[in-house]
Length: 143
Image 1 (cartoon, one colour):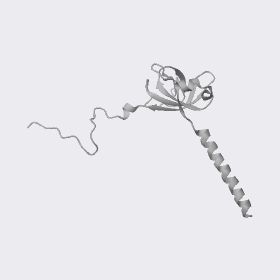
Image 2 (cartoon, rainbow, N blue to C red):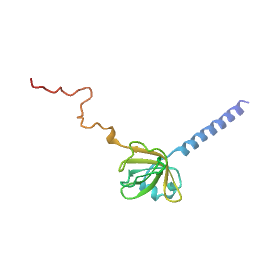
Image 3 (tube, helix red, strand yellow):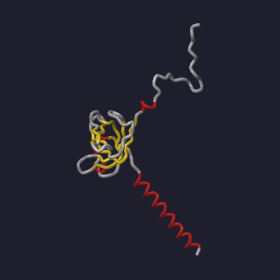
């Protein structure tokens, strides 16, 4: 009786482990450059992430008001992207971007997720770097 319980428990735990591994692999998405994406037909048939820069002059807003068409480039090659949702505030020409989605039959990357990066927005402008805990010396006044 105890042996049956152990074998049954091992089978159940093995099944749960297999389901966890399977679902993890289904949701695992790697970032690929534009060149890697265009060179690999397997990537073009699957859900994947592509990173690069928004090609200058390629942004066209959707006439319906929400969504955008643009091209992502690695500096040499580019892929057309369609994103049908509200774009982030940091989305701009020549900005770094990561799009997640699939390629449609017309060669347009249909993005369902868009991450726009803008490191300059988070850097302090005109601020001298001070060591932690020290404040700048007060300005002298002529009296």
